[in-house]
Image 1 (spheres, helix red, strand yellow):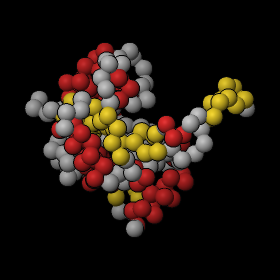
Image 2 (cartoon, rainbow, N blue to C red):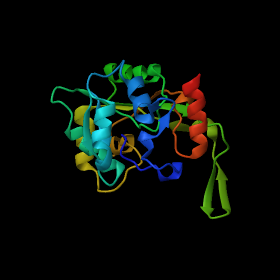
Image 3 (cartoon, one colour):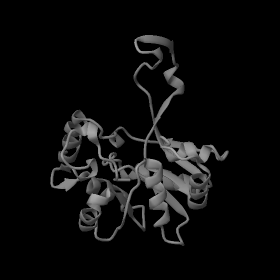
Image 4 (tube, rainbow, N blue to C red):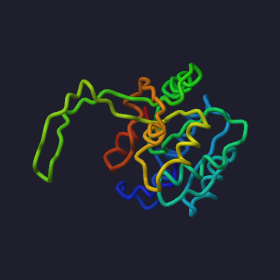
Length: 210
């Protein structure tokens, strides 16, 4: 998934095409998926389809839609017919370790219909009832942050998108859960952080240089 503009990053190009070292974030993300995947489908902004194809010549590149939900549907439509398992990954999580990808795939091959990487929440989390008005403090020992790639049986994910109401679902796991499908969590990694703001680029450049 590389179709977002990434306005909060403050760069002049869409987020996935920002360079960290000699590679774009898109290329970093693809390199970490390569050991586990056979077919790579990149969903890019219509303005950057040609560039994405140039960067990843072996990938299938398609234009995304106005929302993430629609962009994932565009990617699903481009999958080869013989695909059984699908990983949906954000180019913004460019440095996910390959072993996290392998854990997601292993969970699917082990019988799960859907699997996502998760990491413990370390901050104190509170409800906000209104701006400046705090509610209950949540028990962080029961909370996890969800990362990507999220993995699914292809038929399950396609059905979830067909059944979904038009909108912009926060992730694909939430859509398959609406079908009553159980989503399994596997250990994620702090290196699978999401690059959203300028400070995240500082961390990304440090990771890329290490």
